[in-house]
Image 1 (cartoon, rainbow, N blue to C red):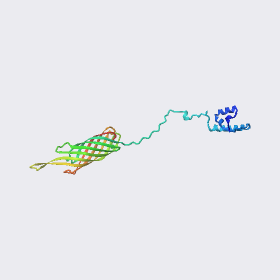
Image 2: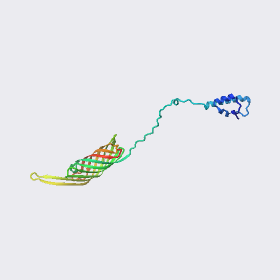
Image 3: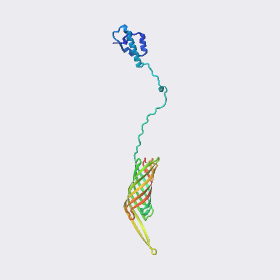
Image 4: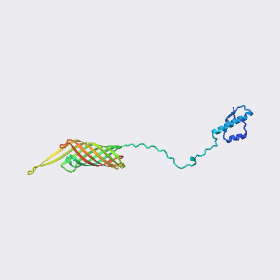
Length: 262
């Protein structure tokens, strides 16, 4: 086989081939090595058809693509980047201290219904909408010196469910406490109309009791490091008193809770 590039082609045909950019035609085998002159035109036609086939199949190097409408009219609009999905919010465990001052309003017992106060210190532990709060408390009377009581509470555990608002949290829940109680009640009796006799009696109670309570309140400014807590609870304390088996009281609490995220 010989290649078309070895043939003595007319210069005009070479110019035509060069213009359409089909230089591969010169490397295409089209005729046998021993070609006769009378078949030259036939082989030339075969080469021409091969030239047209190659020209239709592959554009020449001088071919330029017309710009599309989007490329012809570029804009300065910034293509928005794909947004990354936001991971779901996970509630985290928060631990903080707490301190309370309470006003005690007895409805039964407490050295025969003597008002008092209480001081509490505790730890606020919260995870999401649930919280627990162990406290250490002491409660005592302030008014009548003849009706004394002291309630030492080494452990009082409150459990709460929280409803979070924008800047506050409402909480509600029950609790349980262990009470060491010391009470003294002095009674004075008067007997007779003409001859009056007066007698005094003293009742001492040193007992161990178990208290249960329900508490409801609100935590203000909950997103700050220091929050204000206002709550009201009703408590029952069960013990073997000499004159009753339980005591009850309403407690109003004002306190501070430390730590973020309530």
